[in-house]
Length: 482
Image 1: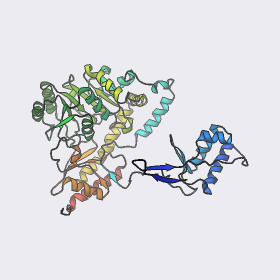
Image 2: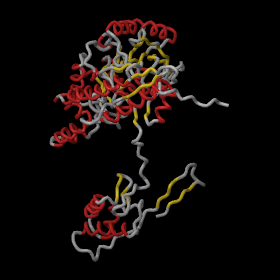
Image 3: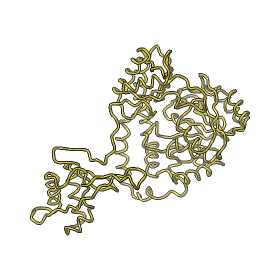
Image 4: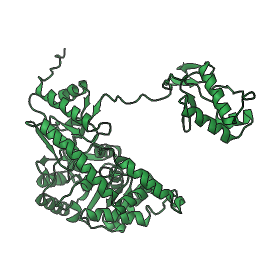
């Protein structure tokens, strides 16, 4: 194997790896040919003829060179992989890992994440149940008669039964919906993107809560739109502040999260939602209502779209409720805007994968979705309850159906210092700077996402304990700058 770098021609270093021309000799070996090939490969690795990191010949080439079928070589490679001597990646080939009894990482593998870090940065659902349900559902799907239909392009932006399932899901949350008003998306983030694509043009101004979801902020910037913050109070976005900002900027679009606001967890009461809907009508605003947590909230207060269905684009998904990897979401819009949204889907990713939409349909119709939602509420609720006990005496907020805590830092802590102190102790938390709309100063606060994907309940509790202990310790003071 030859490893060297070229940096005289290319602007960046390029790693060049020679592919081995090794060929096994199986003429003196007895037994099945695939086992003979596997034994030859194992011996070559043991005696050093094949070193760690070397790439085995392509299966088709090797089959031709030694006069066996492609299937024979495939079985041989599978056998030697089972022994832990090689590993393969689709599109890259099969590589030697190491000698028997000495399993080493192949040089081409990316560095794994640091599992010693407790990552509270991403507001993801708790994992642990959806995979079992997926195994069952995939088995049921595999017994179907027309699987090709789930692998075809969906020219009309969604199969009727998938749109009908979306209607059923929304109606469970008390939202009036019809298939003609629904657009299938690949999650709520995609729903935000296509809604902005359909409703805005580069240079337009978008109003949003002064602290908001970072994914939305990045999409706005990518589309060349302008952001204008709207002040908040303990109930969320302030209607008077919305009216002032709209009249001052001439903006015609608002993005907001009335239900379990990200990052503050605030939820608007009925009076505030009704007032907001009336102001939106008076100001002729189109509203993007992000309700990604709606499937977990057994709320009694209707969403904003119920008060202004002619101008609200209700964005939700199944990611927080069922599984993050499901990537199925819905936008319920005024009917005269549905085709614009479906066109934006075709422009951005053509379609929501039919297989994922079919899994979502089955889970909605057979009750699995509700079971997963109930499990999420219970699992997240236990973590939130523990955090509330440990953080007692601090100023923080959370919603029982959410997966994160908004912690306001006590004096003399600054957000940047607390974030650095937490990271030094192995805990990652985002400071309020990540959520600021516009250029105003960020509050001294952090968001703690207790549903983090790489932490079980015990690890999550350990992270909360570390943060609580940091709050009780003297504030770290950086050296004076010279």
